[in-house]
Length: 405
Image (tube, rainbow, N blue to C red; front, side):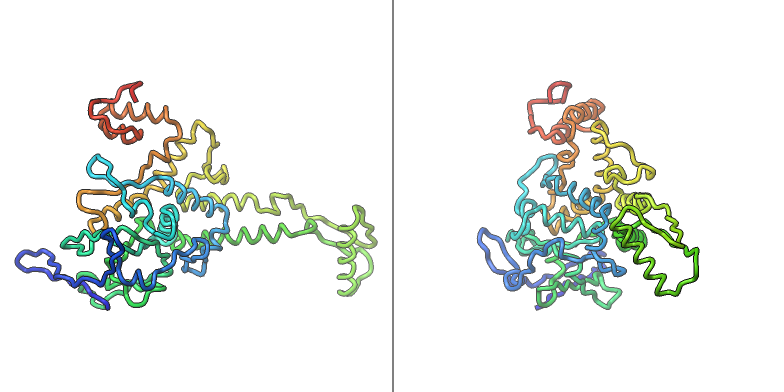
């Protein structure tokens, strides 16, 4: 049964009034958890990342794009950074238990896989979806069934929004159609994530197509047995069949012997170096462009130095990681944090955040000095400094001083 949510606007108060909505049929799962009936009848299996094509635009498939080494490397850097930052739940400055949604949202797989699928869709499609599988049963006026405690990542190609034709409606979204589930799933049972950055494939298909073309050309040249060259007949004219025969004999002799005998023929070799055969410069430039599309520092994928890369040293590793997080990863972190902190997912007064310092803490001493300086300059409080360093809260201490953290 499809239930449609409607909203009316009161002329007196000019505030949105949400009429009472009949509760959906739910099935108990123990521990107070309430599971939508569709999740029990026809669950959508957790698809494997490598076999799901969420890049339907312009005929470019995910597998084809990820076959480009620089694209795959950029994807791995961004996704790897996100899954390395442990998400946590907080109230004010105090961390509180994460709950199932932030430890294992999908009972079929681990949190890292669920986050990886979501982030990958945000990167390349600009949006992502989680299907709510279970709620905590702690009903509120807005959420009669409680807050989500289980959710599953749904690839963008497996879900389609159903929109009303009424352009004047308060919300045109009527629900979603999901492969493997009959009927329309209500909007409240899908958590949609919208990236502030357009999907890379939709806005940069030409650049990706050029990189794919270079990879294909390099593969063809890699299969060349002999350097390209020409044979010129200096004697009597021969017909086409005889010419083909002489070329074939020449190629055979060159493969089997180091010396070739030419009679009435001149061989001119076209100068092709290994760089020419592998299109090294052009592919390095393409790799630089792929890094720029992903906002990833060029040196992290060992792309062309002419593209603005610098040497990767232990001394500047922390700076490179910080640049990666601030430029390439931060937009997706903020998208996930803000969406999971909304009141339809998390109780009011609580929030969701990623522990960025677990990824950036490459040099503990340098990080300690940095935090101490921030506290001394009153940029952050002592409690915030301890949180950054991962030190348990100490109510008896009033400040962070050099050598005490």
